[in-house]
Every structure is written in C-alpha cells, then in structure tokens.
Image 1 (cartoon, helix red, strand yellow):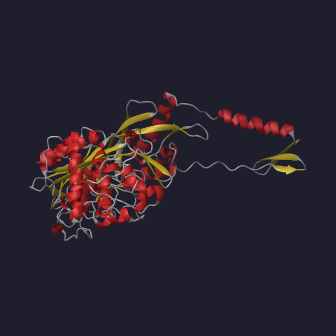
Image 2 (cartoon, helix red, strand yellow):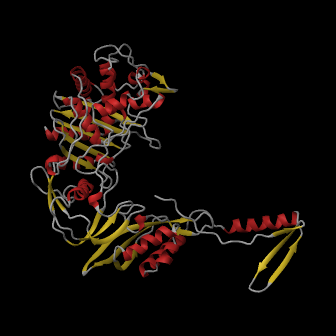
Image 3 (cartoon, one colour):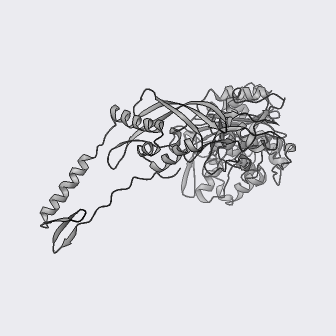
Length: 565
C-alpha cells in the first residue's frame, strides 16, 4: 500500500526585504501595486494575526452528520455520473482514486452504474452498487454492497472520502485492479479424494484454495477460458498461470462470469467429511484456522479458516509459541542437553542475552525432569540451554529434520513453509520457545507433529505430485531412533497429563500433543496454538487472540482427531 499523495499547495510570491522594510508585491496583468510596511514589531504582529486567522479557519473536531452526508453524496453522485475527476477530487488520494475509477469503466467495462446510499453510522456510509458489465457482445448484471468512510483533511479541515480500493469493491486491496476480459486461465472443477466436487458454496473456507488450484492447474487440466470480471492483484500480470506456488500473495479472484469456460478437472487429497468438520469447528471462533494431514504421507485431509479471505492455515506467518518446543526439544535431545527422565532446570526466571525470561504465572519445577518441564511448557527449561547452543543450531534442526524454512514446498497451491532464521543473543533464546523471528502456520505445525510421530519429514500436499510431475521437498535427515522415541513420549505425556490433557481427554493412548501461546504486540490476548497426532492423523490449529492454546485451539483440533478416528 503506497503513501497517499497530498494535494499541492498554491505557489506564493515571497515578500522582498529592503533595508529593514518589507515590500509586498500584488501582481496583475500589466500593472503592479506596491505597499511598503515598516519592519519590527508591527510586521510581526501582522504576520502573527494572519497565521492565527488561518489557523482559526481550519475546522477541527468530529465530523457532523451533515458533513459526512455532503462529502459522501458528492463522491457517489460524481462517480455515478461518470465524472471521474470530480469524484477523485472528493477523496484524500486523488491520483489513486482517479486511476481505479477510470479503470472501472475502461478496464472492467462496467457501465450504467447506480449507487444507492444506505444508513450512515458515524463517519461510515454503506452503499449498494448496481451496474452492467459488457464485453465483446457478452453482458451481465452486476450488484454488490460496499462502504466508504469520511475523514477530515488535516491541513484545511475539509471532509473527504478516505480512499481505499475497497470503496470501489470490497474484494479489492489497495493496488488491485478490476478487469473484464478473457480469463487468463481456464476454470477447474476441483474434486475431493472420493471424486465429489468441492465448491465454495459447500465449503466456504475453500474459496482461496479453489482460486489457487485454478491458477496452478487451469491450463494443465485441459479446460477452456471464459469471459470474466476479475480482481487482478497488485503486481500480478493477470495471467494466473505465472503465479508462484511458494507465495504468500492472495490469488486473483473471479467476481462475475459473463460466459462460462469449460473446466478441467483436478483431484485433491481433501476428505469431504473431515473438511465439513473443519468448517464447523472454525466457525466457533472469530479468527481460527485448522489443518489436518495424514502423517505417514503428507496428504492434506482438511483445511479451514473462519475468515474466508486470506488463507492463514496455509499462508499465515505467525509466531507459534510453545508448539515450537517440539523442534527445540528434538535439538536438545540430539545434543545430549536434555533427556526425558533426567532432572532438568525449570526456575522461575532465566536470563540470556540481556533479556529476563519467565514462565507462565512465574511457576517453577524444583528437581523435576525434562518430561515434566515439557508437559507443563516450561520456558526456562529451554532458555537455560541457550548458552550451550550455536546461533544456527535451531535453524539447522528445523531445515534438516523438519523440512521447514527453505521455501521449497510444493503443495499444489500457494503456501508458506515456515521461517526459523539464524538469530543471536536474546532473539536466539526467544526462538527456542516460538517467539522472536520464528514464523509458522497450522500447515507447518501439523507437519512438525507428523514428523515427530513418524520420525521422517513428509512434505504436505493437496494435489498428488503425479498430476504434474512435481518434486516434493525432502529433509536431509530423519530423527534418530533415540530422539524420536523420547520426543513421542514427551508428546504423549503432555497429551495425557500435561497442558494438552483436558482437550485430548477420551482420545485413547496412541496420541501426542503440544500447546502454545504466542504473545503479539498490540494484542491483549496471545494467539492460542495446539498441535497433535492420533494414529496416522496429524492436526494443528491457531485461534488468534484466543488466549491459552489448550483452551482456545485445543478443542478444535481434538474434534478433528475424533472425527477422523
């Protein structure tokens, strides 16, 4: 999102200073009037008075209902009449508004626009849009709802429409465009693992996934493109076939089909009943995301987000909190810095790199084992070992054993495969407990617990590599037999008697789990994480601003494991 441009100020002729006097020139065409004033206090008083008058003329304070209505009405009336210049001038980003509003007619080919204001709420005004999209003999009605906000311009107090591309259409992000034409990529008919059709109407969370499948496989699946009104994302060529799979970008989006293309067919690994369960679970929370995989193969069985826009489950980049301790524990076990049943320090506080770390509620475990520290999610049990580690040890463990952070996953749609950068001092220590610069999403953490269960990294995938001869990512080494056995027992004990016990109750014995809470600047509550396995199923979830992971995300993940058992 770019910085908004400010309206240019008129050029002014500077007064000339002559022998301590100020000569003010009032110019005209072919004549001039010269007024000479004495310098000193009188001139200062005059300038001060003028500045005060100007400041007094700038209106401040909350906008009145009349001001909001006037600014909004002027903008909507100008837009509806096709006066792009006037409409753009009523916003606080004239250039960006003019570009998008011009494209609305010339690129999106939307005409006969009717804008109907709704009921104002403070400085916000909802409005409905009706129009007609016409392109090469194809015509179709368009209708949607949007909203604008009126703000006061700082320099003169004038009420203006606060410009964002979402004013024009709610699916637009700043920098995006609306374009009507022959679609760059044919549509696809996405199927679940049993051959049933996957649609956004049936599975709302799959909207962005289906868009991604079209970008990746539209041309390869043998379909034929139709004519569409589409959102072209900033930086996109509009040819979705060129989209990169290892990307955090939101894919281009089809808003209206003027003529249907002929879809190709793509089969996914999704399980229809588990997908339905995942949709129901995330609907219980405002900002929840879930992923379930088959641990032994990496097949993705379900993915869901309660917000149906950005796909946090696959593309999110969030601090994973104490779920990261799965990787950190494997590192300590590998290096002989911890052993499951041996005593391990868990003091109230531990200092490293100038930072003082503490446990939740400042608890301590006196004379406890590493198993006890892991099950209770003791931060200081890990921070106390930082001085014995090299700066790149955790990064190597994440990449070489868990397949994370190399930007080489190829799951079938856009995804983020985690980040565990090399850190030093306090940031390195913070990384051990899933804070600092470590970033993950539920797909990554489902893969982490699957690796802990099987001992070997299996890259998750949504579409079989046999479809397009993709090469799945590999990890250079597996967990050692000793580390794998201890890590599994740590996770089992956490699920049975630790912080994950309440959520995992009733799931039997072939299970393991880890909770996590990640502090985020500006949030009152941390993000709550939970990752677990049951048999050959691995699942992970996050509830943003949900609080403790066992209470927030734990029930959602446990419900998925129960449904799959």
